[in-house]
Length: 211
Image (tube, rainbow, N blue to C red; front, top):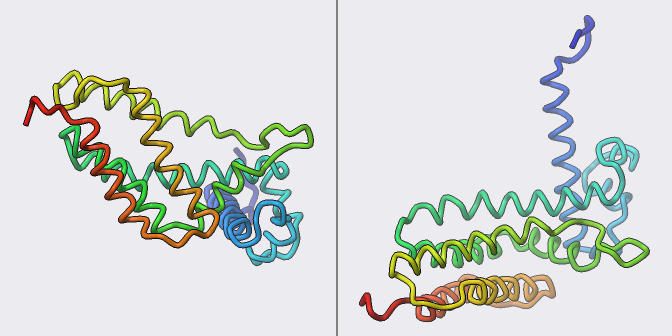
């Protein structure tokens, strides 16, 4: 790429663009969390982002679908970044399972605004024909990894024999139920909920013969 005299350095332009996109996504998250997806207009998002025109949103995102897909992807990436080191601080399957459950709930406790926005977008972002506006396909990945972790624990003899897919689905459903409670403003101890889930599934999965 040729750079003309007086032009900003390409790396600087990329940094500025990324920062502006992140600013807009953060404002979209706050807007949805406060007003709900249905009222999260570009005008409201621009106001919270502190930018002068909705055209700046359109400059950085190819419409509503692109922006709200970025919202979903951003929160999902943050959840992974938060959970991954906490899970892999352990090597024993039961401890890793406990860390998976409790770190997920810890993230919700610390970032309830993001959780409310994520749940609202996934539930309500629809096209005119009723199909989802954004993709939630990435949310299948944690379930698949959880299934594999449970099977590995069974192979090592730490976990008893059970239907790994059924148990993984039950774990995810229990975690997602907490997210839904937060989304509707339910006031409860999220961390205590996580500890109870961890204890429940420790009992449900452990191999009594190894005790």
